[in-house]
Length: 349
Image 1 (cartoon, rainbow, N blue to C red):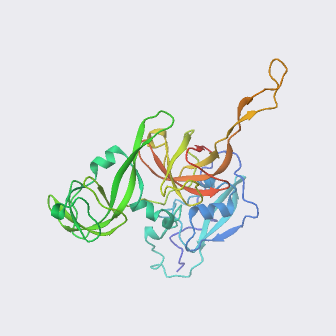
Image 2 (cartoon, rainbow, N blue to C red):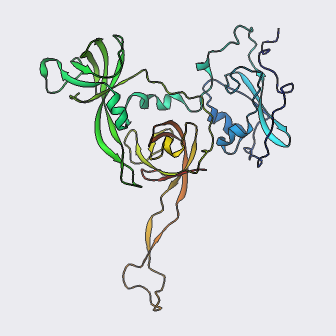
Image 3 (cartoon, rainbow, N blue to C red):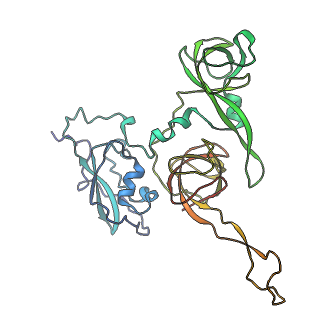
């Protein structure tokens, strides 16, 4: 029996209704076939075939006879073919010779769009918190023994949030300074400062959480974020559905210069049409300089300073959005061709 019987080959797949579009530019030296490897991301795979990975949804040829046809697994053989004059990438089969039973693969084994390990610390550590999110999280009511502060080995009493089973692990986060949108000067969130980790030792109201590891002292009012919070990463890299023009307003680990695989916060979110998988181009903000060489209306060179001229913004990298809230979005820097800083612009590619 064919081990890939549950996946129709590209040659026999039913014809899709191919919509007219501009031909997607292919990567220089692209392969005709590619075997997906463990550790690959969808961004990596798209980059094998395409000059711009966010065109993937335009070239991925979905086989309607395959269950979960959008998912790609290690061992899958992907082929570049031409359909109606347009490049398409299809599933050719599997490089693994497995029994049909072994071909039933759990969904969480599928290739993700971005490397999970690069955002793992984001899931439980420093982040930006929206007001509504803060209000829904459990909080430290008091410390055992009424200490002013608590550290690893101490217990804290907690209220709020959803009921949880003993052993549930939390990250403790201090609510820091307001984060202001530079476009309208409105507060879009609050800086979350990682305090430490703890585990629920006793339920109830208040519940008891034992601190297992701390970077700084836990204070009353600090919030607890369940470490089980999961973010689906099986979305496609794509250009946004709307025209986006925003800014990077924070970087999760607080560095001044931002590089590849760092998590950044954007001042655009769900209400702006941003969705997971959206790819944005980062532009380094042009500096303002004085032109000391342009003559004035009187024909003379300036005696002091000169006319102010803003240099053009320059492309500096690429960000993929992986999590959105109403007014903010989180993105992972996929490429950094030059220095990226807070307040640099992000725009539709």
